[in-house]
Length: 78
Image (spheres, helix red, strand yellow):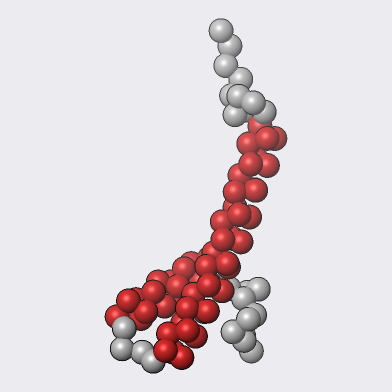
């Protein structure tokens, strides 16, 4: 069972899509203050999940680039 605060298994695309839906609902209005606050909090959680995924991807990319050397791994002569 996945709870509101258990996003360990939530993938980037799933979190992003849910975040888009949260934003749409907030922009559309028509929700009570309590519902709006709950949506806002959920959006903050989802944004953190997306940020963690993107930070992880950036770290992997940086590590791969560092392994290939300063010239990006190209061994051009001349």
